[in-house]
Structures are given as C-alpha cells and as structure tokens.
Length: 302
Image (cartoon, rainbow, N blue to C red; front, side, top):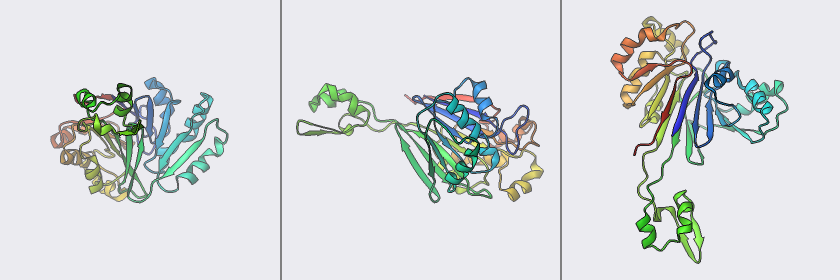
C-alpha cells in the first residue's frame, strides 16, 4: 500500500487556507517528500505525520515556493533526535543551494547527502521502489517525478519443491536475493512467476505541456499536475511564464488515460479552483481540484 498526501497546493505565495507546494508519499516504512515550500511542516503536523521518518526529499526546481521550507524542516528533524542520513535529490546546483540555506541550520545530528540529477532524466533505485526524474519545460531547469513501487511475481511453492530448494532460502529468494550454497546458485526467478503490476504516481508542477510528461506518465495510477490558472484569458500568461492551465493538465490526463488527476500549484489569484472544474471535467471526467491535505491509499491489484 502506498500512502499519498498533497500537503500544500499553492504556488508563489502561501495563503491562509493554502500552503505552498509539497507532496509526501509513504511506503513500507519509508517516506519521500517532493518539494518543501513554506508551511510544509505545519501541513505535515495537521496531517498527523512526523517529519522524522522522511528518508528522501526531491526538489523539482529551486524557486522559493518549492524549497523555502527546507531549513526549518531540517532543524525540526534534528530536534526530533534524528541520526539517520537524509538524501536530497534535485537539479544541478542542489549542493550549492542547500549549503546556502543551511547557513541558518548549520549543525545537525544527521548527515545531509545531495544527489544532483544528470541530463534529461535519471532513475534512482531503492529497496522496493524507484524514483524517476524527467526534465519538463519551465523558465529554469525543472524536473517531474515518478515514484514507482515494484512488485515481484508470485512465489511458486511447487517450483521450489520440484527444484529441491531448501525451505529456509524461500523468504530470501522471494525478496530478490541471489544465494550460493553447497555449490549451487539459487536465483529469484527459480521460484517467482511473472512480475506483477506495481504502483506508480506521477507528479509535475511548473511546466508547459511537454512530450516528456506524456511519455513518463504512461501507466500512472495517480497523476498530479499543476493547474496554475483556471481563467481562460490567462492562457497567454501561462505560456509566458511557462506554467500550465487546468485545461492543459486535463488534456494530458486524457491523453495518457490516467485513472485520476489531481490538480495542484494554484496561482494566488485562483481563489476557488473548483469553480472551473465543469469545463475541466468535460475534458477529463476523473479530475479533482485538490486541496491541502488530500490523501489516498493506493493498493496493489490482486
């Protein structure tokens, strides 16, 4: 099961009812945060989740509404007596940006590691899931992200018995481990069936519509895209500042045949995005004007 929560849905500046951009996902005891705008800590507390278990923070880009909450988040993690290393992933220049922000958070009881994305995209693999970064089209270098939870094939007891594989090795093989014992090499494919469908969440903000979004969002169980503007007359402004309207996001969701679309990263001028959802849903019926704190639990197909 993958827990997904939009902590903040605002762009540019926080509002009394809308914090800045942030998304958190939890899987198998690990937490991944994407972007850390102002108010992320408050939204996290309101959700009832702790910042201490966050293992990875990804940044789409370095505009303040996506990273200004980081120093406070680091200090809170330190005050919670965190000692495990924290991994940060983001565009080239991440190390320099984080070092600058840490002027006000210089001493922490844990190591902060920075991984800078190379080129048009990169995949980072972890235990049981991977993070895929892909470049989008903003006025600075900016990336979208997929979080993909992998799922191995079903364990085949009859095959394991037929090959006389010791029972004490079954669990390790099922977890993907290759084992050498008594002159034999045992591999996971000896006991596992075909790989089953996992889970995938695609998240993009601050971009014009691009082929890279369409390509990388294919097969997503949940698509989260910016809907900066709902007012039709602001299309020219979206093009000028390289953002996306709610209607453009809906067209992408329709094109990739996503099961559902959450809109986020609203302009401060877009006080009531739900007022524009009639036309959005005519383009893509399973679209939602998400609010701060919107959550879902995604489960594997049986």
